[in-house]
Image (cartoon, rainbow, N blue to C red):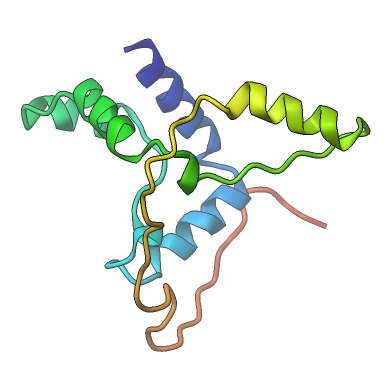
Length: 130
């Protein structure tokens, strides 16, 4: 419950950020059949109220998703540092070595998020920019 409130607070804080609004506009105008178009954050409505009304246990769904999809083969890590490469490699192995490799295939999607007819959209910024 505490984490849901933290996500909700973070979402509310970003609602009036121009970069976030532009990104949401891109998602809204993209192909709705592709994952890019889906809501990528959360709020109390999506994480608590709607699932509760539908009898969905969000925590159990999260644990199920983790069991099924948390896999080193689906992740990428980028490390930058002044330390010698063997040191960086050791640190990465220490921090990420326990993540299971399940041999899962990377998801593939047909099409492009913006393959529809051309459109012009005007986004009015919240902040005045010079």
